Image 1 (cartoon, helix red, strand yellow):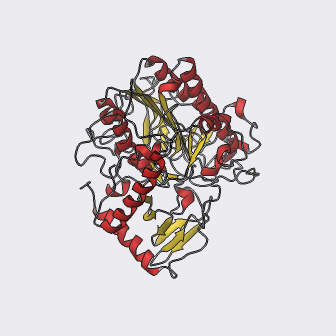
Image 2 (cartoon, helix red, strand yellow; image 1 turned 60 degrees about the vertical axis):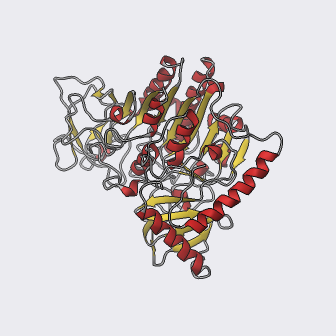
Image 3 (cartoon, rainbow, N blue to C red; image 1 turned 90 degrees about the vertical axis):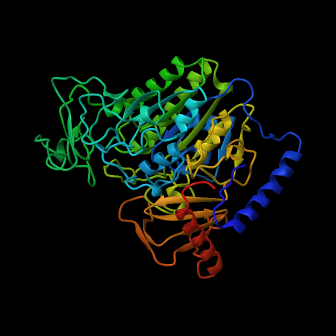
Length: 519
């Protein structure tokens, strides 16, 4: 198995010996899952990637809101308790997932404005391009937020480069997020339903929209902003940024889950002969949370809770499509989230007031925008009948950064030297064979944090320490040290009691930051 071998050799040799002993014991026991390559037809692969969904937001992880379809995945597959996005915000997590490269290695990978240019260089080896190499049809449906085009984007023509240039045969996407202009869908590089007589313009530097803004007319809004989201009004909701034109092309927030799910299931239908890879990046439960009327007040938790119910419906539609087409047995389905939860993220949607018994981050500290565990420890469920154990739990440390190398291994795609440099083959972990997982894993949010087994080092700097704005914590030098196995809430800093361990993790993080390519 490929393993992370930087100059901290002693730590990794110890870790690999531990893994080897445990793995040898497991495979010696009858009835467990021996390592396998793909047998027969290569599996279809579906990654359902939720937005701002916390570890504790799904019922199978203890959530109070019913999520029967996600629970079905857990019942029929493998549920992870220590799986992580690469960052505590959306753009860097998505960048790392698709490129197998930590976002901190490249400038300009923070949260992007809606008119940003593509931050993945065309021709880069990516997760979808590796699967294409193995004969897969590939699609990105839903939230993109990795930039589009070069230079000033002209939304009225073909916008390139984009998803096609980084490995996706087909795409139907939102350019950025639901709270940022331009509020349109794009399919194969063009704005959907654009009227040439009503051209689109978008700006994040100057006001180009002379109609009343959300700041000027808050009483006109169907959902008022709480901070920041007070510029152009689209569908009765004010956004970040200014937009003019494209009236016919503008999305209706309440219909978004239906529209995106229809295109996701349509791709499955069209490519049912397989093999295919679908990256279905939902909008839920990101702000603005404006679910369809059939989900309103279904959760008891207000718009955020209703958005979770809507998200679960999206999952159910994908599963039903696979069932109807007879594809479920040979489809690897993964459900994950891009970062931890947040409550007030710019709109007055009663997320705090109507939280009820829902505990979005479960037992973990903080959420989105944080270096603490709640920022990156997110749901992960993996279902692949007869390959991943059904109804089981894995406590192995797993990072989304490893999906590129792991899925390349699964389908027999060649990973060129230097490509996906931070991604490691963790297929055995993904399928439940390795109970330990990665030796170490970086968490990004401004300054970095590092997990090594059950230990967590949080480097100095400012980080959020709650689920709402204003709950910030200044981490002083030399940083914080926690044992997250014994202290899941990261309440007891052990840096003073364990100075040698603190120094070891700090040095290990420095080594990772200096290393770009695999040896």
